[in-house]
Length: 422
Ligand SMILES: [Zn+2]
Ligand SMILES: [Zn+2]
Image (cartoon, rainbow, N blue to C red; front, side, top):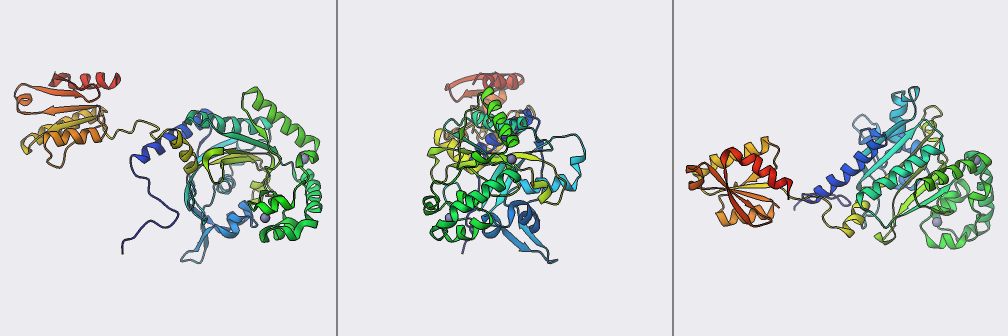
């Protein structure tokens, strides 16, 4: 029996990996423009980090974690997300003692035991940023402006930014009591999960994906009517800065984060025509997270993007996102006696930073030409007996179909010229 990749995982092969490189380049270069730099953390952590830092009532922790016991009886978990990991690193390296804010981005695989569906995998990739150490609403706005800048640079057009404030622990407590009072009479109409959730964490009922739960709680109070003065001012400032910077958003009363350590700003990016769940990412402020992970009281704000879903949306508009040629130049020489020459020439081209390749399969001239085309080569260089005897190469511009003879000494300059104009 042949072994296949585990359910919910997949391989990225070339040329699909070209699209990934393109996307990752836009993500990381844009983040660095805003002063966010990369943090690389382990793929697995102590399980306790996620029960504390993601929350032991969330679906992620209760149903979706890849946890295992290692040979020393430690409970470890493949990271389901990276925000808790960043908080752990911040605490572990005492970085909160230095100049603030600390601005990080991360990029890499996450793992959740979820039902695989379009754009949703058990090993999936996320890009995210975290900014720790400032409570300024201008920092919330910066994070959102960065997110929108990334989407625009990637070439996504058809997205919506949903925005809400979920207040602070003080004003949220008042709201929570109102919400529980509203839900309680309808509790028997809720799904099994929500019947447990609503008394412990009623905001998570608003998050529930079961339609009948939404029907049951219709007319529920909105948190915006319960924000304290300081939370109101924070939210108004974020909205004002976004408007000043020409970022469009929709205030969304239904957007909540069910976890205690989330505070103030919450946002999500939706792509309406992507199918399934339309959210491709989101984030917000999480002033209670670092403390929940065992550190000092350090505020934070950030977002995470699901890269499979972004790529899905991008390739709906455009199948090829970036130059997907395997080689710019293909060197054609037929016969064993010419192989030393073609090898020397590709070496010279590569040393001059020209992406080039040659035949290794003993193909005929015609078959090598065809192969050069398949690799997307812009130029073929042909070496034959006459070329060797007279110190020249035949250079074929594949796009224009033009062929010319170029003296050996001028070959690099000539190729660079064609590539610069192609
Ligand atoms: Zn408040
Ligand atoms: Zn429910």
